[in-house]
Image 1 (cartoon, rainbow, N blue to C red):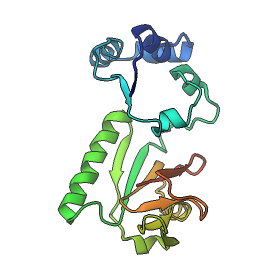
Image 2 (tube, rainbow, N blue to C red; image 1 turned 90 degrees about the vertical axis):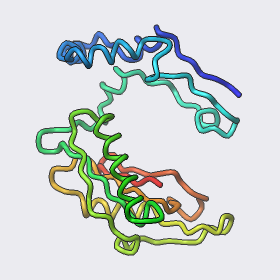
Image 3 (cartoon, rainbow, N blue to C red; image 1 turned 180 degrees about the vertical axis):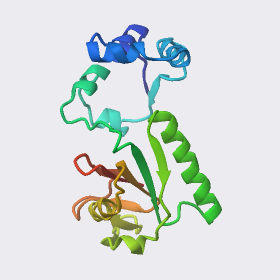
Length: 201
Protein backbone atom coordinates (compact mmCIF):
# COMPACT_ATOMS: atom_id res chain seq x y z
CA UNK A 1 0.00 0.00 0.00
CA UNK A 2 1.41 3.38 -1.06
CA UNK A 3 0.59 6.80 0.41
CA UNK A 4 0.98 9.98 -1.65
CA UNK A 5 1.51 13.03 0.58
CA UNK A 6 2.12 16.53 -0.80
CA UNK A 7 4.30 19.02 1.05
CA UNK A 8 3.15 22.51 2.03
CA UNK A 9 5.43 24.00 -0.64
CA UNK A 10 4.01 21.69 -3.33
CA UNK A 11 0.46 22.79 -2.48
CA UNK A 12 1.42 26.47 -2.57
CA UNK A 13 3.15 26.01 -5.94
CA UNK A 14 0.11 24.20 -7.30
CA UNK A 15 -2.49 26.65 -6.01
CA UNK A 16 -0.85 30.09 -6.03
CA UNK A 17 0.14 31.80 -9.26
CA UNK A 18 1.96 34.99 -10.27
CA UNK A 19 -0.28 35.29 -13.30
CA UNK A 20 -1.67 38.89 -13.06
CA UNK A 21 -5.20 37.74 -13.87
CA UNK A 22 -5.12 35.15 -11.10
CA UNK A 23 -3.47 37.53 -8.65
CA UNK A 24 -6.38 39.94 -9.15
CA UNK A 25 -8.76 37.07 -8.38
CA UNK A 26 -6.93 36.25 -5.14
CA UNK A 27 -7.18 39.91 -4.08
CA UNK A 28 -10.97 39.74 -4.38
CA UNK A 29 -11.28 36.88 -1.88
CA UNK A 30 -13.23 37.78 1.25
CA UNK A 31 -11.93 36.99 4.75
CA UNK A 32 -13.60 33.57 4.90
CA UNK A 33 -12.27 32.54 1.51
CA UNK A 34 -8.76 33.69 2.48
CA UNK A 35 -8.90 31.56 5.64
CA UNK A 36 -9.98 28.58 3.55
CA UNK A 37 -7.11 29.15 1.11
CA UNK A 38 -4.57 29.44 3.94
CA UNK A 39 -5.91 26.28 5.56
CA UNK A 40 -5.25 24.38 2.35
CA UNK A 41 -1.50 24.84 2.83
CA UNK A 42 -1.37 23.31 6.32
CA UNK A 43 -0.02 19.73 6.44
CA UNK A 44 -2.85 18.63 8.78
CA UNK A 45 -5.61 20.15 6.61
CA UNK A 46 -8.56 17.97 5.66
CA UNK A 47 -8.77 19.68 2.27
CA UNK A 48 -5.73 17.97 0.78
CA UNK A 49 -5.18 14.87 2.88
CA UNK A 50 -2.81 12.05 1.90
CA UNK A 51 -3.97 9.79 -0.92
CA UNK A 52 -3.82 6.10 -0.09
CA UNK A 53 -3.26 3.76 -3.05
CA UNK A 54 -4.73 0.44 -2.00
CA UNK A 55 -3.51 -1.68 -4.91
CA UNK A 56 -1.80 -1.62 -8.29
CA UNK A 57 -5.26 -1.58 -9.88
CA UNK A 58 -5.90 1.90 -8.45
CA UNK A 59 -6.51 4.32 -11.36
CA UNK A 60 -3.74 6.71 -10.30
CA UNK A 61 -1.23 3.84 -10.35
CA UNK A 62 -2.27 2.09 -13.54
CA UNK A 63 -2.88 5.30 -15.55
CA UNK A 64 0.02 7.69 -14.81
CA UNK A 65 -0.62 11.24 -15.96
CA UNK A 66 1.52 14.37 -16.06
CA UNK A 67 0.82 16.68 -13.11
CA UNK A 68 -1.16 19.88 -13.69
CA UNK A 69 -1.03 22.90 -11.39
CA UNK A 70 -3.76 25.50 -11.16
CA UNK A 71 -2.05 27.98 -13.49
CA UNK A 72 -1.78 25.32 -16.22
CA UNK A 73 -5.48 24.55 -15.77
CA UNK A 74 -6.38 28.25 -15.82
CA UNK A 75 -4.35 28.89 -18.98
CA UNK A 76 -5.68 25.88 -20.91
CA UNK A 77 -7.13 27.28 -24.18
CA UNK A 78 -9.74 24.51 -24.21
CA UNK A 79 -11.06 25.33 -20.73
CA UNK A 80 -14.70 26.42 -20.84
CA UNK A 81 -15.63 29.42 -18.70
CA UNK A 82 -19.10 30.20 -17.31
CA UNK A 83 -20.66 33.46 -18.50
CA UNK A 84 -23.65 35.53 -17.32
CA UNK A 85 -25.77 33.71 -19.90
CA UNK A 86 -24.31 30.24 -19.17
CA UNK A 87 -24.02 29.97 -15.39
CA UNK A 88 -26.03 26.92 -14.32
CA UNK A 89 -25.12 23.29 -13.77
CA UNK A 90 -28.05 20.95 -14.43
CA UNK A 91 -28.29 17.50 -12.88
CA UNK A 92 -30.46 14.93 -14.64
CA UNK A 93 -31.10 11.68 -12.78
CA UNK A 94 -31.76 8.73 -15.08
CA UNK A 95 -33.57 5.76 -13.60
CA UNK A 96 -33.79 5.06 -9.88
CA UNK A 97 -30.87 6.05 -7.65
CA UNK A 98 -32.12 4.11 -4.64
CA UNK A 99 -34.67 1.57 -3.45
CA UNK A 100 -37.37 4.24 -3.13
CA UNK A 101 -38.13 7.64 -4.64
CA UNK A 102 -37.41 9.29 -1.27
CA UNK A 103 -33.92 7.75 -1.15
CA UNK A 104 -33.28 8.80 -4.76
CA UNK A 105 -34.28 12.39 -3.93
CA UNK A 106 -32.00 12.42 -0.88
CA UNK A 107 -29.05 11.25 -2.97
CA UNK A 108 -29.61 13.84 -5.67
CA UNK A 109 -30.07 16.70 -3.16
CA UNK A 110 -26.85 15.69 -1.44
CA UNK A 111 -25.09 15.81 -4.82
CA UNK A 112 -26.63 19.22 -5.53
CA UNK A 113 -25.27 20.56 -2.24
CA UNK A 114 -21.81 19.19 -2.98
CA UNK A 115 -21.78 20.77 -6.45
CA UNK A 116 -22.86 24.14 -5.03
CA UNK A 117 -19.97 24.07 -2.58
CA UNK A 118 -17.39 22.80 -5.08
CA UNK A 119 -18.41 24.95 -8.06
CA UNK A 120 -18.73 28.10 -5.97
CA UNK A 121 -20.70 30.87 -7.69
CA UNK A 122 -22.58 28.66 -10.15
CA UNK A 123 -26.23 27.75 -9.78
CA UNK A 124 -26.97 24.04 -9.52
CA UNK A 125 -30.44 23.01 -10.68
CA UNK A 126 -32.20 19.66 -10.63
CA UNK A 127 -34.19 18.43 -13.61
CA UNK A 128 -37.16 16.11 -13.17
CA UNK A 129 -35.96 12.48 -13.04
CA UNK A 130 -36.56 10.41 -16.16
CA UNK A 131 -36.76 6.64 -16.68
CA UNK A 132 -34.03 5.00 -18.75
CA UNK A 133 -36.56 4.34 -21.52
CA UNK A 134 -36.95 8.12 -22.06
CA UNK A 135 -33.34 8.35 -23.26
CA UNK A 136 -33.93 5.86 -26.11
CA UNK A 137 -30.37 4.64 -25.55
CA UNK A 138 -28.87 1.36 -26.68
CA UNK A 139 -28.31 -1.23 -24.00
CA UNK A 140 -26.82 -4.67 -23.47
CA UNK A 141 -26.26 -7.31 -20.81
CA UNK A 142 -22.56 -7.60 -19.99
CA UNK A 143 -21.44 -11.15 -20.76
CA UNK A 144 -18.98 -11.16 -17.84
CA UNK A 145 -21.04 -9.56 -15.06
CA UNK A 146 -24.54 -10.19 -16.42
CA UNK A 147 -25.34 -6.58 -15.48
CA UNK A 148 -27.56 -4.40 -17.61
CA UNK A 149 -25.53 -1.63 -19.26
CA UNK A 150 -26.58 1.47 -21.18
CA UNK A 151 -24.63 3.24 -23.92
CA UNK A 152 -22.86 6.36 -22.60
CA UNK A 153 -22.71 8.06 -26.00
CA UNK A 154 -26.48 7.76 -26.44
CA UNK A 155 -26.99 9.31 -22.99
CA UNK A 156 -24.82 12.27 -24.04
CA UNK A 157 -26.96 12.77 -27.16
CA UNK A 158 -30.09 12.73 -25.00
CA UNK A 159 -28.60 15.27 -22.58
CA UNK A 160 -27.51 17.57 -25.40
CA UNK A 161 -31.12 17.79 -26.60
CA UNK A 162 -32.35 18.53 -23.06
CA UNK A 163 -29.68 21.11 -22.21
CA UNK A 164 -31.38 24.38 -21.14
CA UNK A 165 -30.37 27.73 -22.64
CA UNK A 166 -28.69 28.98 -19.45
CA UNK A 167 -26.74 25.76 -18.86
CA UNK A 168 -22.99 25.82 -18.48
CA UNK A 169 -23.25 22.03 -18.51
CA UNK A 170 -25.68 19.19 -17.90
CA UNK A 171 -24.74 15.96 -16.13
CA UNK A 172 -26.66 12.70 -16.23
CA UNK A 173 -26.52 10.53 -13.09
CA UNK A 174 -27.50 6.87 -13.13
CA UNK A 175 -26.95 3.74 -11.05
CA UNK A 176 -26.89 1.59 -14.18
CA UNK A 177 -23.54 0.52 -15.66
CA UNK A 178 -22.32 2.48 -18.67
CA UNK A 179 -20.34 1.30 -21.68
CA UNK A 180 -18.86 3.53 -24.43
CA UNK A 181 -18.52 0.95 -27.21
CA UNK A 182 -19.01 -2.77 -27.73
CA UNK A 183 -15.31 -3.59 -27.28
CA UNK A 184 -15.22 -2.04 -23.78
CA UNK A 185 -16.23 -3.87 -20.62
CA UNK A 186 -17.55 -0.72 -18.91
CA UNK A 187 -16.76 2.95 -18.27
CA UNK A 188 -17.14 5.05 -15.10
CA UNK A 189 -18.37 8.03 -17.11
CA UNK A 190 -18.08 9.95 -20.35
CA UNK A 191 -18.25 13.63 -21.24
CA UNK A 192 -18.17 16.04 -24.15
CA UNK A 193 -16.26 19.25 -23.39
CA UNK A 194 -17.54 20.94 -26.53
CA UNK A 195 -21.22 20.11 -25.83
CA UNK A 196 -21.01 20.60 -22.07
CA UNK A 197 -22.56 17.20 -21.34
CA UNK A 198 -21.52 14.34 -19.11
CA UNK A 199 -22.81 11.00 -17.81
CA UNK A 200 -21.60 9.09 -14.75
CA UNK A 201 -22.70 5.96 -12.94
